[in-house]
Length: 356
Image 1: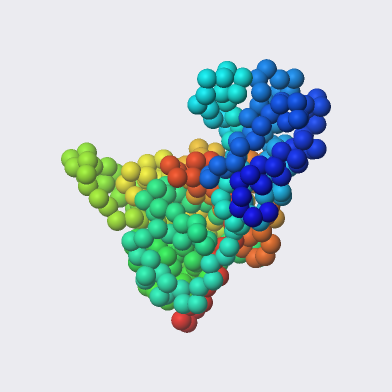
Image 2: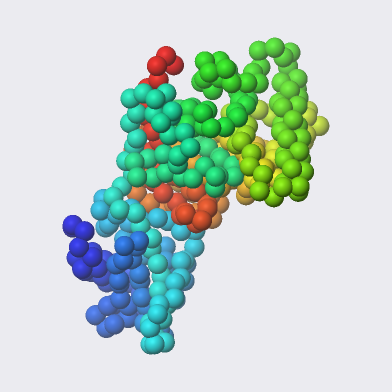
């Protein structure tokens, strides 16, 4: 296809004319037009028209265009129809549906020495894929979901390597898995289930650690009240296997846990106290809706369908998205000023460490 916008527009128009089926209206009778731009393409309807310009039309155009544009461009799925105004004097063509894209496809970072790589990136943007990185200062809280064997724990360990040199970290790992081994190797505090007699005792020890971070939030809020320009070190609380953590514990212990997590989620942003939550799924047993809504970096790894994305991305219809294949493949959504509500295909990094 090449990168000629004229050729892309021609291919899009031909495909939409054949596949849309909007009351036999096509570009040939000037029912709509398509314009390709650097950051995406526009579907420009001629108003009035005999078809509804709505979310259903938007999703239909996305499904038709996504495979067509692959691999030259990756369409970025929106949760709902994305309208933009056009600057012209003709009332009939003053609005369009916009379909943002990124050039190329998801490409996995392959890192030979994660220790050196992480040391080089301290103070820089957090790399997720080739040509895709995020600003740590714009992250509130992170949620990572995926079934067993999908690669979510490996991605968590990658994040720990990248955060270790620029943030305070405390890890809760009920399964004594890779995060615990990482913590032992690098001297990071970990709440493990080795020295507790039962699950209630373990979750109570987690609650104690969460409570100390709530105290930290209140202390930093007092500092901000006195000095609005005060800067703080990032502080991350990592909770692995969130869903399994509170199963079979007493109601009081579970409610205390949920309340503390919710408090940190709601108040931690301004004070740079963050959550990284990992779970096979994020249903109401794992996390309250109000807490889920505070996650602004959302990762779903493994099987992608409306059922698996329902909890972390409830407004997303994943149909039409070209999902990469392999371990650690899935979707990522970062909700900030750079990536508002856009969902991208994801390939998580692969890496080697000196002694892991």
